[in-house]
Length: 100
Image (cartoon, rainbow, N blue to C red; front, side, top):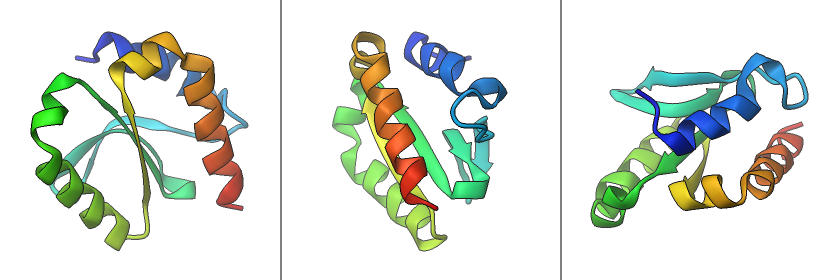
């Protein structure tokens, strides 16, 4: 089940709305399930709730593992997505532009 923040961001990413890039949600990778990924651009997007403030070591290890495979990882807090969706989408758009 998606959180409210994940649902809101997914509404911006699905159906190739963001520059024609295809995103997958809840995608398994290297023993983890990432919130969103654009495989063609090797971009992972994680939307973190309050519990992640207490598991920074695990999140950093997850990021390192994905980066070893050449993926870039963007992390956003739930409240960022809910309160500043346009800003979050712009950061993602810029990251996609840098991959070209």
